[in-house]
Image 1 (tube, rainbow, N blue to C red):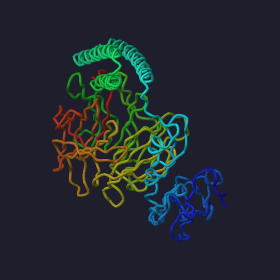
Image 2: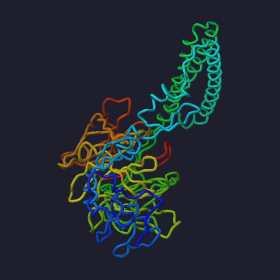
Image 3: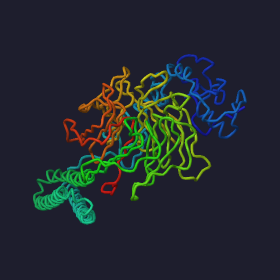
Image 4: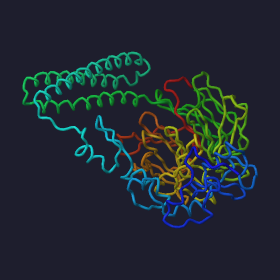
Length: 553
């Protein structure tokens, strides 16, 4: 029998529910109501954390049937999880005064926003733990350490003096920063010649900022002579923050103005499944470069240590590599193959780990697997299956956000088009459901811009090609609709370089193969504009950005 866990959070205590809980909903390890239930192949159910800890500490066997069991072979107990999710449970902060009962599925959201959550008073010298909803009243009215407005003339004068000294120190720091930026401009001058007019403009803006800052300082010095204007002068100090923001924006303008060249490869079109093109911003045109050794249709790609990898594709097990900093560019076949041909999958790099997500496995159908690719030779495996997603997916989107992977839409079980958004945590091999997309979506292009993921084109659940563009806020799930593309595009690909999104190829609503390209500048455009067309029509291709200014031909 497995030992009862005591070093991690297990299931829900029975006393927290407002009704009697079915005996089938209890975990046989922690003896509580199951949380995120998982089951073995004989349908014995446990809390996910309980059974994973049992497998890690005790034995890789089911505690009930004693059959072999690993974390990867566990399956979500969807029916039980759904029934438990509808039970009413009290808040985690019931002992602090919250009397609400909510559905289990809404518990996490409620706890995050509960007014009875403990917080600390921020007044210096206090540190009292209070309820979140009482924080403002406590800090401003009840706390004995609260700050009380002073009308003492001497205290105001001393406060102003300290603010002035802080201001002078800030000015010195900004002056040093400006000097360093000027030095950096000299270093990169040769590499950014096409953007020299913009750099000159930014340098002028920085000098204007310094001049304005000097003027502000002089005004503050004069204002000290008039005590009756102390409060007004203190308010003027608020100009520091906008000045710093202006300086930061200027630096961002330099970064955004330097665009990367665009690489596109493979696809399922007229003779393009091996071919590769690169768009040079310097030449403003597409160049054909060395072709791949194998055909890669609906494959995936990633960049790792200056090497571009192309992975799998339709009935293809091979991986090919290209060192993007070597000349001439030469493709090499990676020594090891995938265990099976796979198409419509995604590969992403997260914290130096490479994850292979979903896709269609040749001869087996749509996959729900997330596996790890090893290309360094530091372990005994090249391809290792890690866990199962809640449901299979194909032709989906995948974006790395901090230390998580977000998985968008795609084809699911029984050819159903999904609107789901999943957050995958590689550290715990667990999934979290995020707010869904506004409608089912598959075969779209996906790029990340700041805290937004932009989803472009694709097919809806009626198999109709779209020209829609939506932004998904990765923190809140809020949807923002951007101007539609000029053409409907399914199975297209896209990159973002600087602050410009470039969308390439695909199929239109008449199933015609496209070589057209269009672009949209985030924050500055009201509509899409055409871009130089590719040499070949392509759909189901891969695209990446590569360093600007390389010699590719």
